[in-house]
Each structure stands twice: as structure tokens, then as C-alpha cells.
Image (cartoon, rainbow, N blue to C red; front, side, top):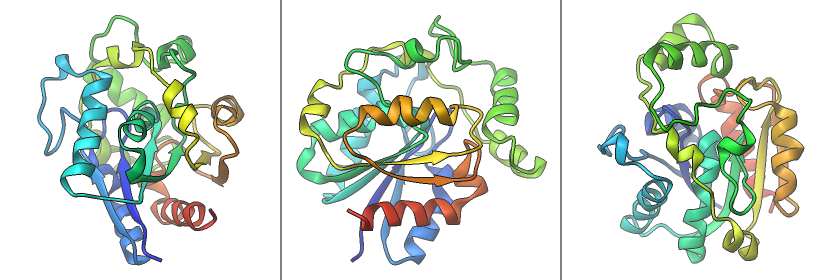
Length: 238
């Protein structure tokens, strides 16, 4: 059966980052699309005014405008604090959530609380400098990619409003919904330690199905075929 996948990118990236995974999902006979979060690509926005609610609104609006239903909502990294809010907004449209090395918060917890010593970003709400973003991607997000691939990605990344990571994330209604969830563990991730992601984050979900990929954080760039296959397998395994 053909599925409908909506893919939400993580920090500093855009819908473009999912291009190879979207192509693979479509090749496998599914409907797949990626959304630009506010402040990048086809969704221009003042970075200084971006909040978590703005991100959630953007993804929910994307789904509503296209009248998508039975959506498998896929979130990478920072998108883990976004896709639960989208699900609460429109539970009748969401079939399953797939967290790819993505943050899973307790109710009222912020991402910065979890990563205050993990190098995710500063508490001052400022955007990262281009130099620090470049270094972070080379060392932690794309350490297993070729230099040419690193250069390609880094040329397209954009600053994020880091204060979003300091916002408390409302999760009570999401956990009350108890939606179907799955996770993809990236075994060589240096941005989010695999042991921090699983089981620290994944234990907060009720009986998620799990797949692992031997990849760093930028799996959509380095292992798009494996990523797409894992997404489909997790969806079909329900």
C-alpha cells in the first residue's frame, strides 16, 4: 500500500536536505514530500521571530493546505520537538511518527535542559555564527561524509534561532494521545549520542518500533537508500 510521508528537517537545514530520501521513497511507490521550516527555502521568515509555535504552525499548515491524511510524519534531530505538536493539532491526519535521532522531550522540558553540556547551542538565544556552524557540521553532523559532500551541505545551511531550543515543550497532550511511534537509531551519531537517544529519549515513547542504521547524524545525505528503506519498514511493520 502506498503511504504518505511528510519529512521535517532538523536545525540549519531545509526541505532540500531530504531530496535523496524523498526520491527513494517515491521510487518505492510512496507519496513523499519535505517541508521547509520557517526561515529557509520556500518559507521566508524573520529568524529572530521564530518560535516553536511558528514551526508547528508551518508544518500543520503544510499538511492542511494539501489535505494530506494518514500521514507518516518523519522528524530528524530538532524536528523531534516539532512533530509532537503537529500531531496534537491534527491527530486525525497523522498515522505514525518516526523520530530519526530526534529529541523526545518530557512535558515542560526544553531541549537545552537535556543538552546544556552537549554542545547543541548557547542559552543566549542568538543565532550561531557561520564559522561555528561550519565546524559543527564537519565535526559532528557529517564526520562520515566526504569533503565534497560536507562542502555541498555547508554551502546551503542557514542560521537557526537558538532560543527555540530553550522553550519548554508541551508534551502532555501528545503522550495522552499515545500515537504509533517508531525510531531510527544512528549508530555513529556524534551530534546526538546514540546512547543518549536510545534509550534516554526512546524510553519516553510507548513501545516504539526501532531500526538502526550505521551512520552519522546526516543520514539523509550519507545513507539515503538505507534511510528510506528503514522508514518504509517501520511503517509497514505496524
